[in-house]
Amino acid sequence: MATKRRSDSDSAVPSALPVSAAIGAAAYVLNYVLVYAFMLVDGVESGGEIPRWKVAGWVFYNAHNVDVEAAVGGRTASGNYLESAAAGGLTDAISALTSIVPKLVYYVVPAVVLVLAGVLAARRVRADLSGLEAAGVGAGIVGGYLVLAVVGVFAFEYSVSALGTSASLAPKLSAAVLLAGLVYPVVLGAVGGVLDSI
View 1 (cartoon, rainbow, N blue to C red):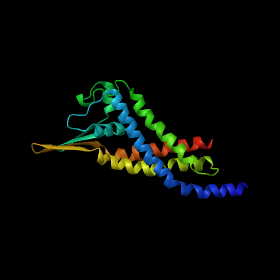
View 2 (cartoon, one colour):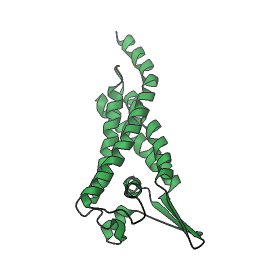
View 3 (cartoon, helix red, strand yellow):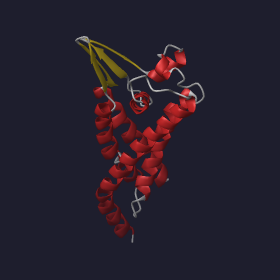
View 4 (tube, rainbow, N blue to C red):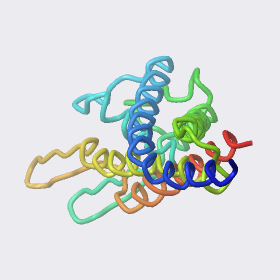
């Protein structure tokens, strides 16, 4: 009986990865929607010409410890709007950020969603998984989360040209791939998978 259960789990883990990836993609979308909702509660306005949904994307990446990079001419600078808001050094466009919703909530809620996504991914497997197998299935959410994390960098980019000079704002690609796309979903998804196996 135990042998049958082991072989069931061995075949279930690889077949669970597409479902885990889909759960990861859904977690990305849910996290973005939640950050956008927090900004609405805070009363954040759009940045003039900059659409509010793009500003929400920047804050979403900031919540994953990914800075937004500003490039003007040949110069670049980067920053985290959540940290700037807490210090009071923010542009008028999003000066209300963290005025009602605490800064910690912006950081914690996306992490909790990823843990729950890992739990859900592990639960979708109809087999008796060891802790390591459950961690692998939970970490499988990285498939969907990583793809959307990369796409989001380009979707949330804002560019403008005036007087022969161009400027752009976007989440920093390398940090977005490493932190938002890989570290967050792999680590937190695996934690969720393990929690489900306990």
